Amino acid sequence: MLWSLLKIILFVALIALGVYGAGQLTEMQGGMQIAVAGMEFNLGPLQMVIAFVALLVVVWLILKLASLLVAVIRFLNGDETAISRYFDRNRERKGYAALSEGMMALASGEEKVAMAKAARAEKFLGRPELTNLITAQAAEMAGDRKQAEAVYKRLLADERTRFVGIRGIMKQKLEAGDTETALKLAEKAFALKPRHTETGDVLLALQAVQNDWSGARKTIGTKVKTGALPKDVGKRRDAVLALQEAKDIFDEGNSIRAREAAIEANKLSPDLIPAAVMAAQSYAEQDNPRYAARVLTKAWAVHPHPDLAAAFARLEPNESPGARLKRFKALTKHQPDHPETRMLLAELNIADEDFAAARKALGDLPEKDPSQRVLTLMAAIERGQGAGDDVVRGWLTRAVTASRGPQWVCEKCNHVHGDWAPVCSSCGAFDTLSWTVPNEGEVKMHGGAEMLPLLVGKPGDAAGVVEIVSPAQPVNAEAAPPHADYADPADEAGDGAGEDAAPQTKK
Image 1: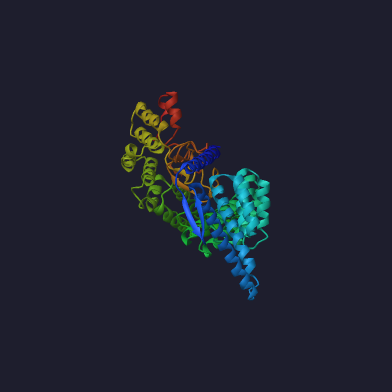
Image 2: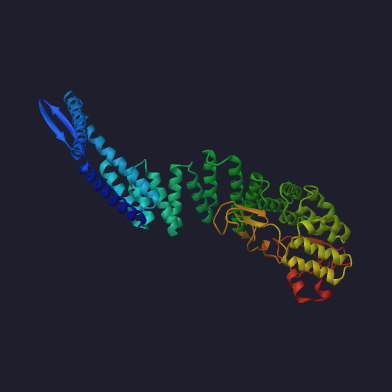
């Protein structure tokens, strides 16, 4: 609207300027005298300007006629296309001018102007592979999906524009929520151009949504072969897909195939935590705890995680606290300064009722990284060393508002997940979940547990057998903890109970 008003004002200003100039010329004195063949012509200032413009027009016509004359002479000399080329050059010049104007209008958001210029360019050029794309994009911008889809379908007829047509229809189907048709179109587009990054990513995401893990692995393999994906990234993503495929096979009841798939996923990416846990479980079911421990230790050395510690504990479920502390040295010797390693050592020492060693293992974590898990462990240590209820409740009160520590967070949209998944449930991105502390927003408890890893003993066991229960394992209500009865810090701080509200430790 504003631009149209400016154009009108500019046009009126030019007309006014022309009228003013003509008036000035008529009032000017003097002129020009031309003598030709004994004849004299006296021209005033205004007549001089008109004569100059007429001269320019005559020169332009002479040049055009000269070009046409050259084309006729070439035609008479045997060049049958000389005259047609002469007229085609004019049409091409007009067509490309309209095409460029259409592209500029499309970039400026003037969809109607872009469609009109595209139609004019098609009239002069006859190049639908150039003009149809502008028309389709302008129709999409104007909200006319039917016309856009019709134009994209016309692009399918030409081998050179088939990929563009398929991709355009695919995007429309995605916007309409028709994922099944979009998946078929993505497969066709990917077959035409396997190196196209966007199409490959869309196909992979759609296959993941449809739980087509086998097809997704083939897509990853093709992307790696064609160089569209680095080998290390492709190997990692193939491991993620193999892991999810193993989970589906396990749900189907085929435990043998599931074990093989889990072990394959771990071999593809040893640092993938869920794959390491499932592979260790598979080795344990095959009565091979040594390989299971090796898998978990290797993963822990790369990235300590509570699920790895829980899986390592399940390898020997009936050992004493002292024996467990000794066996866990295979894990804790790796990355000893990592917060997860220090919290694990504190838990093990609390289970062994060595509260001084547990406090030493935590070190300065309560000051530098006061997560809910750290503060809850400090409450248990204080209770074990005979501190009063006010001290214990003080630690639990701090835990109420403290960070819950690392969670599975999507690197793309920052959505927090309770458990690891190959695809983000919020944005649909593939392999974007990482174990890190969320920046902001709602924090979900890992595995749905009420607290972070707990130490739970078995009732009636004189030897004081303990078990590390990770967040991935819901706490068994029948397993009343004789060594450390952890309660939710929010409950502890809110009810103001006395001795019964504080963690109890077996003496």
